[in-house]
Image (cartoon, rainbow, N blue to C red; front, top):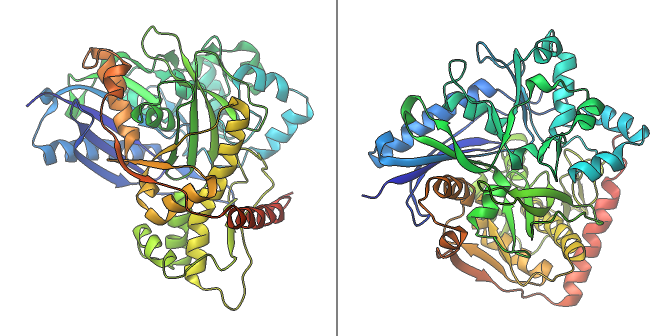
Length: 498
């Protein structure tokens, strides 16, 4: 058997380890969920120590399923939820506080304060990102200020900051004994502390956000050998790391300017490759790093981020109890012929791209005595498609090119009803791949590129992907009616939190 590639995919709701052959096909995987900690409205946290325990468990489980050991792996890559912020003790490896998750909104007051100071345009120009609670810088500042002794320790380098890739890489390579404290450039681009053109920590941004440089990881390429793993993966080169959406972009082989994909996970994340020059959005999108492979020039992307997509199915399961498993949502939504004029705006953490309204909150609009749980389920599914339509329209306006087809991946892409509605509402084909979890595949590709399993991106692009194509089948009049009603519901969600 040819050697395999491994990928640790650390997401918002779970951690999985995947074994992949050189053709990009998944051989074995194991997955484990972790707790969602919500101590106050708008606050979302994770236990970073629990995430690391789960990572070790799924690595061992996947190896056991495939009946292989570390010596059967050529390299390992990492993909991760991006802006989620961890601060830990350099000597012991113990987190100093729960990780603050990307969708957490506790820093809204700080966002408003910086906006009032008039620094938003400068921050956007340097980072490609608007002032928002989404990104890591203000989360880290909160941890430094609210965790006793944290700022002093961080200033001395005794406390270390990282996004989740930094946290798992540090642990995978030996932790307090020998761990590498690094962050890949795609994740660094989501901190709001890195200059997107120089790919270096920016001194002016560090001053604005009041971040001590000593706690920051080294910025590294997305595809290079960072070191060797310890534990169950002892001796395996750790050779790739990307934020999950950037990994999915690579997994979809969106390697040319104009290529676009949408990942339906906890949130929805639509990225378009724009080549080697960053393109500043005029329509509420983010400019972000697509990937940096070894010594090659960095590649950039436009991104539209939607906070709540698959997480809404989890909410219907855990908070309302109208389904027992997230997989039941399609059958429930199909129990009604249409949405019954019900619209669900899942602005639990405000609205991200392209509106960027932190004052929005979730609502269900259009309820009548006719409405039932099937209509609510259908409206919840359609919300992901409506929001993706808004992002795609902004992306087309910024890039000046029409999307010939939208590539999709992520768990919700298995939902035929959602994929057909997505094609209908954007009036363009939707292409679903043979395997949906391309985040892990992209991280494995990055590791494989670093050690020569693949000679080039063209090798990766040659892998077959398409499984099904959903063609639009909706009249222009019906599309316009649905979009108008959706926009009416969104307007009613705005200004709720003041």
